[in-house]
Length: 148
Image (cartoon, rainbow, N blue to C red; front, side):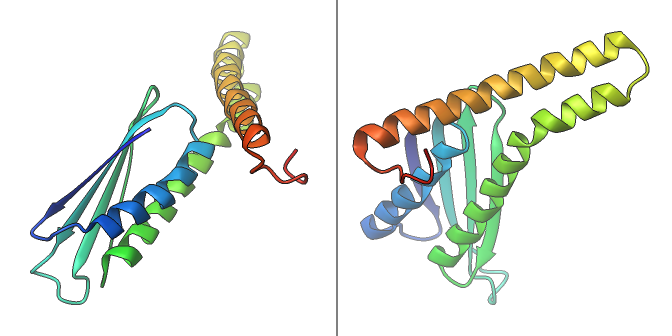
């Protein structure tokens, strides 16, 4: 996964870039298809109480996911934006059961079949993510025994 950090009206230190890379590594457990994450840090002159705004844009083979947050410093704004993005990716993972339930609530078999196809695709994606996470984690020793 490529991580691109840029700043508007402010400097972005190497320490902050390293912090961003460390924090964004967690996103791959929610979507293994991530190709690139763009982080834009902007110093806002109009709002003194929320001096820094961070925008995250995650590009993958699936949909583009965006999140943004503002806070007094870069680290806090990054944490808030990352929490928002993580929540979005978790909601996407829950869509398997939601699609099956919605399809069952429809009247025709044709609509049910459509929702089952969607759920099947989501389940394949979730299975691929789990398999990759377990494979990589077990070879590096980073997966705890409770996760297996």
